Amino acid sequence: MTFLNSLFLFGLIAGAIPIVIHLLTRQKAKTIKFSSLRFLKKLENEQIKRLKVKQLLLLIIRTLVILLLVFAFARPTLKGRFFSKVGTAAKTSTVVILDNSLSLAVRESGQSLYDQLKAAMATNLDQIFSAGDEIFALHSTRGAPTLFEGARYNFESVGKIIQKSKVSHRVSDYFSALLAAERILENSRNANREIFFVSDFQLSGFNGDSAVVRELRADKDYQLFVVPVRKKRISNLVVSQIKIENQIIEKGKLFELSAIVKNTGDLELKNKLLQVFLENDRMGQATVSLSPGETQTIKFKLVPTKTGIISGFVA
Image 1 (cartoon, helix red, strand yellow):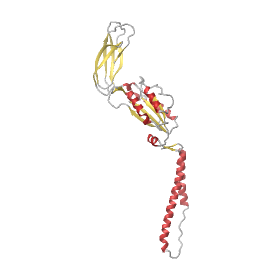
Image 2 (spheres, rainbow, N blue to C red; image 1 turned 180 degrees about the vertical axis):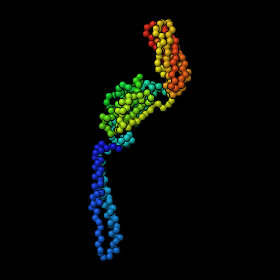
Image 3 (tube, rainbow, N blue to C red; image 1 turned 120 degrees about the vertical axis):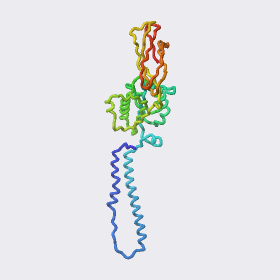
Image 4 (cartoon, helix red, strand yellow; image 1 turned 90 degrees about the vertical axis):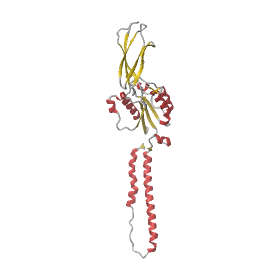
């Protein structure tokens, strides 16, 4: 719970006023000698007990009235998704950070991780957001623009925009993305503020500028939800560099091409086929076996069949 007008909470001190008045105005019983009334003693004690209970109830009611007035002026609001579902609650400002770096192009169960991410987001948006919530979305890759300008209030339209987004060749910068999300929330007037960070959290994404890290808020007034995408161990073979060893390439003459491949996955790869294509024609192939993190240089000897510009790729 939070309060929109927290200064009024100082008024809670006023709750002590009825108690002070009660203590100051209590009358002390006086002893007066009188003739024997021993038969009325029992009735007298019962009346005194009822009077004390009545005074105590009045004291509690007066104190509660003051406290409730103070809370009403302070405007309490309930924070959290649970309260927004079961009753009236303050609206939420949410920034969704999506990692669309190239590592999310890795295929798992016949589908890329980024496609799985988009499908999961589209399915669960109605569970994350409530009607009237303020939604922002941005990518974690360096220099990537926001998915849309300003805020959106319809999670269905946000889902459609996310579905159209694609994997980028840019590198992720997690700290810069988090700082951008913080700056968006600084301008929000909603009591609830949240950041959903969806990523596979590659180590390279944490190599950000130290100055950016220092700008991140230590006393954050938002909730950060980290959503890891990758759940299984994966196999991933990457061609990190291609180099042509010959300075001059001529039609019908042999030239050498080197490809540096690396196993960036979690599993050992054995006898994986690596192929070279020129003008979409397969010109060479080799098998590769690599342990996780291992790098190997594979050399191909090729003969071009035409002159001019020749396109090709290694896969």
